[in-house]
Image 1 (tube, one colour):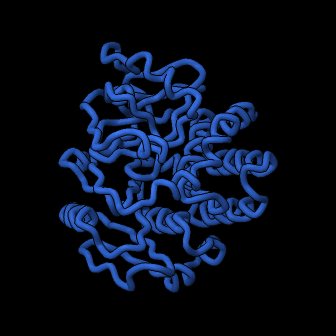
Image 2 (image 1 turned 90 degrees about the vertical axis):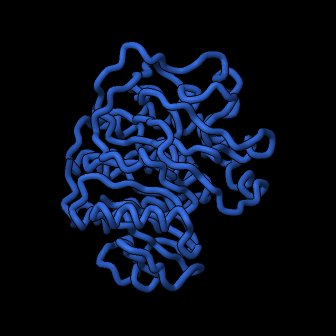
Image 3 (image 1 turned 60 degrees about the vertical axis):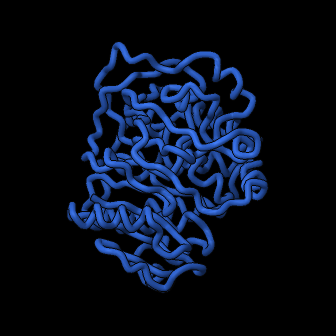
Length: 338
């Protein structure tokens, strides 16, 4: 079991609990440091790499990733792959595992399938609160409250190569929610939800499980804000999952968050590009003619095609494409293949 984080803080209570749980299960916590942050991360079952150690890695990405950015997490993904992971989990250092976190993940879920084209506010499948996930188009938020999403009857077995676990108490919501609504919010238990081809919902990097065929889709873009990198990745990943004939799944809360200090107005500033462009971005991705398949050559080409579209549309600079190419080259070196 491999869990990947990046952090600029000393070990938190959540990471101490996570590392202890991994130590009991023979797992590894991969911690990617940054220029700002601790020189050591003394926890059991933990591999900590500071900037200097990261730059000495054999990966092409190692010398290209910018400092001071959440996307340094990409190196942790590659290290977990190098160790032969069949699946990996990612989180943030302000999350604490709940007892159900330690269930062994499986790529097939007995889930409520949400079909149809358009957007789905999956939080509504696990809560009656008027809440929406970070990255959800603002012009669709109010109408998303009209009905509960997904009924418990008619569950189907479905492959979900990416699975978003929810987080209780301080879930992943945008700055507008935090500035105008109240927390904490906790989610109800319920059957998983799987989104069918053509159905969109943003997912984050705070409590997410990835299975090997989807490893190429882990790539976090660097030339965007901290608040957008995992959201924009989620749109690319969903589009590529459709070409793999797989699904994005959401499961009940398996963590709770004790959020690190944030300035909500600064978060708002970093989310403006998302408020403006998320919906149009997914429309461009949906229109792409991607290859069907899940071998590395196919998925790597699809990933590049998605980021080329985002760059040519002005959402990301052309410099992002050099990093995507380096990522794909590193995957080929590791022979990551579904």
